[in-house]
Length: 431
Image (cartoon, rainbow, N blue to C red; front, side, top):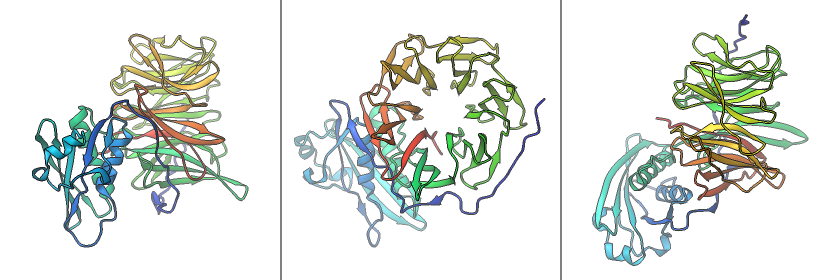
C-alpha cells in the first residue's frame, strides 16, 4: 500500500540567487580535432551609447572554439573588420585560409538589444544567411550563444547547444564546515547561480524535459529524499520520504513520470512515479541491486544498472512486457547508463584495467569506445544534440568537470576556482 506522501512546498523568496562574485568554472581546452575549420568572427559594430557590457563576437568565437570543430582567427591577425557581408573582401580572407567569416551589428532596442549577423562562405564567395537575434538588457550572453547555435548548425548540419545550461553540485569547506550547493550555469561555466545551499549532501540533479524544473536527492531530512523544484519560482515539493534508499530520479521524456530507486520494500528496486497522481509502480523484482535508471528516448523502456549477473552491468527493461535484457558484456564493471538523443549510443562508466573511465557502446553492434584517460570519471551527461557529454573527474584531490565529444576527438576541462564540483547534468534545449 502506498503511503500518503509527505508534501512540502517552500516558496523561496530569492530564487536562483545571483552569485556574480562567485568564482566560476573556467574552460581549459585540452584536445580538438586535427583539422578544425578556420572561421573569423569580425568584431561587431554597436550603434548605441557607451560600451556594451559583453563582448558578443568574443563569446561566439569562444563557443565555436570550445566545440573543437572550429579554429577562430585571432583578432590581431585579421586584415580588416567588416561589419556586413557586403564589406567582406574575399581575397584577404583567402590569404589567411579562412573558410567562413561572420559579421554583425548590434542595435539598442527599447528593452534590450538586436543583433543582425551574416555568415559568409569565403571559398564559395557567397553569403549563406543574414539572421537576427534579440534579447533583454541582461541577455547579451544569451544573444551571443543563440547566434553561435545558428552558425554551428549552418556549417555542421547539427543543432547547436551553446544556449543550453548545466546543473552541478559544488562542495566547499570553510571554517571546518562543509556546505553543498546546487548550482546552475551556462554550459561554458559562465553566470553561475545558486539554486539552493545545503549543510548535508545533495546529489543526482536531473532536468525536467522542458527545463523548467529540477529533481535531486537531498539528505537534509536526515535520510535521502527526492525533491522537485521549479527554477523560476523556487516552489519545492518533497516527492519521497520512505525509509532506506530514495535515489536516482530521472524524468520520462514526456515529463509525466519519474523513475527512481527505492528500497522501501527491502531491496533497491526501480520504481516509476506518476507525477500527476503520485502513484508508484514497481518495475523490478530481483534479489540483486537494481539502480541508476535512465529512459530510452521513446519512453518505452528503461536502462539501469544491476549486479544480478554477479557484477554491475547495464540492462534494458521493456515497460510493456517487463522483459529485461542485458546490454553490456565487455568489462567487469559498467554503470551509470545514459542514452544519446537518437537512442543509438549507450554512454556509461566503464572500468578498464582497474581505472574508471567514460565509454560509449553502439547499442546495435555492442562495440565499445573508451573516451577518457583520466581517473575516477563518473556521472556522464549528454548534450541534447548528442555531440558532447560532460562528466565529473579528479584533478589532484579536487573534483572538476570535463567534457568530451562522443567520438573522443574534442576534450576540455571545467575546473572550479573554489571547492570541488561534481554531478553535472546537461540541460535539454530550453525554449
